[in-house]
Length: 165
Image (cartoon, rainbow, N blue to C red):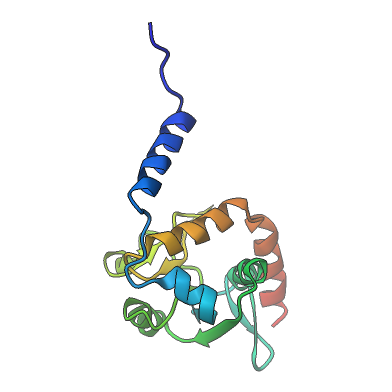
């Protein structure tokens, strides 16, 4: 009698198949563009995820996580503050690579932009980062980082920094 395959074995097989087919893909080459030219991040000010610290400085859990991600990859970051609607429209037009600021998986924007998998479950819902639509390789890089990130520590720091302002 044949043994049943484990979840890990099935996942490995699916990943191997995807790689053989050239997947995941970024039709607009977001991952390549970020590696070559730096990370463009839209920031919705929503404490403790993102807040203003002083006149021109940003703090918060997601700001810290994005800075760690960029530091690990040697990326420059450009932050653009704004409202959710404006920033997500820019993301749809591929003018930004990422939007942060306490976004939730059940957002009405889920139909027009991409989201990472929920990386933090809270009373208000699953928190996600917004990514350009269809950019699967880019999304997978972010999700792999988030899976290993100390989100609780970033959130504690974000609360402390945002309450201090």
